[in-house]
Every structure is written in C-alpha cells, then in structure tokens.
Image 1 (spheres, helix red, strand yellow):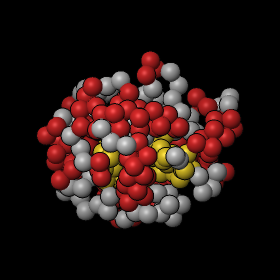
Image 2 (image 1 turned 45 degrees about the vertical axis):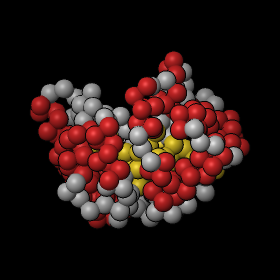
Image 3 (image 1 turned 60 degrees about the vertical axis):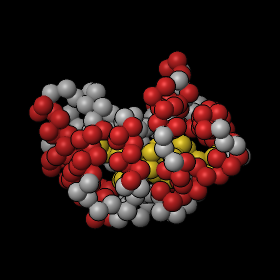
Image 4 (image 1 turned 90 degrees about the vertical axis):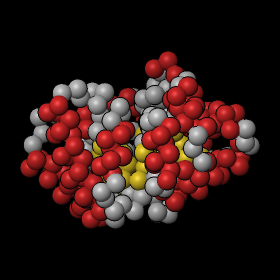
Length: 254
Ligand SMILES: [Zn+2]
C-alpha cells in the first residue's frame, strides 16, 4: 500500500547527487510527501521542489530553532513575511519550536521561545497547521502551545514522556512517529500509549535511520511493520488509518 511521509527534507544536499532517482522511488512507493522547510533558504528550496513535483510533494515553511543563531527579530519578521506571501502554496507553518538538546544556555532558550511564540502567532493568523519540533523541550513547548488557537498541531518526531503524550492527545494534537521507532524503545513506548487516531508517520529523512545511514521517505513502510508489531494490529488497516490521520492533520488539503 502507498503511505504518506509527513515530514522529510528532500531538498537537502544529501540528495544532490541522486535526487531524481530518489524521487522516482518515492513516487513509486508513496502516495505523497510533506517536505518541511526549516530556514529562509530551505523554505525556498522546499517550495521549488514542490513546484517541480506538484501534487506529490507538499511544502511547509518555517524556522527551525537550531538555525536561529545570529538571527535578529527583523530577520524573523522577513521570514514571516515570506511565509505569508506563500501561504496559499504551503500546507503548514513549520518546522518551528524549541530544542534544549542543542541550546543549553538560558539566554539562547529564551530567544528560541520568543521566536517560537511569534511563529505560533503566524499559525493563528494564517489558519495553517503547525509542525512543532520539541527536542528535550517537550514540557515547555506544550505549556506555550496551550496559549494559542491553532487549527492543527503536529508534534514532529515526538519524544516526550507518557504524561506529555497524554496531554498532547487530550488536546487532539498529532504525534508524528519517526523511523526512530525502528530502534528506540522510548518511541516504541509512545506508540503503545498513543491512540492510533493520533499517530502520523514520518522519516525526517535524510536523518533518523538506524545506524545513521541516509534515510528515505519510503522507509515509513518499515515503521508501519514495526508499529503493527507493537500494537498487534494489521498493517494494511493501520496504514489506512495513518493516511487518513495525515489528511486530517493537514486539514484535507491533499
Ligand atoms: Zn525535520
């Protein structure tokens, strides 16, 4: 069956040498792919790729918390303005969020928070779903999210504890399970404790493949097998549920 990868970065240089080939394989094995923007440059390359593969690649535009170093608020306003200008072409604002794994200073974390809040405002303003990165900052991110009226919240690559999973599910957020499920006990545990209606599949390709090998969007099939195993459910049925969830999460734009 054809699945959806709801988070990857096919515009990254990791695919520079064989992107056409990789795309062929993706189109053969998948229904569609959501390609996430993460910086001013990647927002544009994601958009360009989606134009080239119209109807198969759907882009998001955002500002990744680990890429805001040296960036001021005027620059963030420029990013926001660029997103506004393309809001009809994109399916979400993201990725945006906070990352305490990479940012350990108090000051840096405060800055992440300021940026995140401004981008959430943009999510409210545009009515687009938000794709949220929350590495090691899950609790703070969930606290902040509570103050915003958002159409749809996708917790990308979620790694929070069970208490946080519960909070996210209660608020009808989507828990996007990456290929980490292939090797992470923690993520397996999250899958076990999340209603299947809240689960989405993603690879975060080129990242997060076992053994640090290059990842590909069609590896969501391996995750599906693993999740079927964890939950004791039938693969095909589960795949259909995940595809449906993804359509709902992105407000049925595809
Ligand atoms: Zn990503």
